[in-house]
Length: 296
Length: 167
Image 1 (cartoon, rainbow over the protein chains, first blue to last red):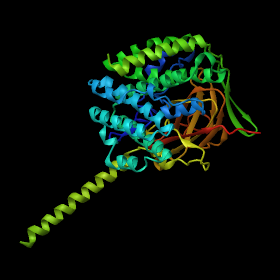
Image 2: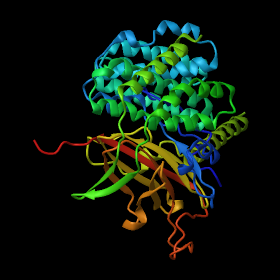
Image 3: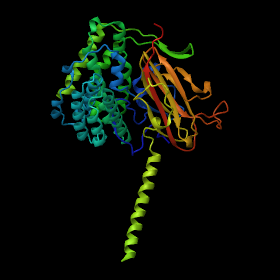
Image 4: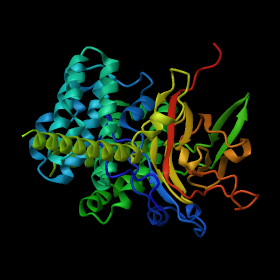
């Protein structure tokens, strides 16, 4: 049997607000092998193993990087008016991810009205994508009744996002989920890169941004699983320049798991990153993000 | 006139019963959010549900790998749970995704079902899971990834900012 983490067809809905998180999906033995450097190639497979790639949600990414240091800039967000230009499935899925990340951002800054607006836009896009039942009346009612409660809004948004993820996985719509994940991850990184002053950022912040290479690796592997789909193949091509920037960064060393004072600690070396690399990354991310939201 | 009415009611009851059984079956087969229902959550309120958690149906000799990303400055708690048909004990190994080096194997600690660690360096990890079968013969007197039937298996991931120690 090879079902493992593949959800049953009765599965359900996706969504979390905030992002694209866990975009697992059907396992695949070959995709990772073809992408990884030789050192990462597994030895000859002795048993059938399914592999899944998870992507932290935008909310989790913001939480990791923010630490109270990021500011709120509404001008960075994708205008909800742009929804009228998203007529094809690729732009709808990618911008579903973009708006999900924007919702995660506005929710985390307790911007209630903006959050409601993004939620409404995501709901409209979910209709176009055929995943609208993630947003049933009960969920909408919960949101309306908690407009003044930031924690509840964040939780409800996250719940709805997870519902959508689960729905897509359960219905074997991995390719749609891959596009949503791509849009959400890109928007999250776009926001961070445009909220941080790279040239004066401390080493810790620079490291956190370059750490996104790990999430990108999972995203890239995940997209590759669905590379036979034309929209996904095109999206992989879209991300090539960003991949090139991450590839140019020095690779970190291995990991260690040690017990210190009764607590296990995962450690490992970081090779650092310079501001030129981050500025190049910002340029590539901004270019691709403009392409995605303008749908040109 | 009474007979047809009774017949209709009986038919109605039968349809309801069939629908109920079908729904029950579908529910029992669905592993959706199994990790949230079956895996033991941390007693610490600070630990929050992480979206990389996952559940799925496992069958005979199945083994899966879940690639996750863990961020520096966070504490993670990973809990495992399986349905009764599978025997409820999950065997897992945690590896560095890049080097494939084994960082932890729960066989070393009597197959504990929760694993907690502080993360000081952001990394991609592979969580390799299967079902522990103590009656197997796959080496060392055990065959760790084996079962004849299928049931749900869940991996619940929770995280929180690593608490600061000292003043």
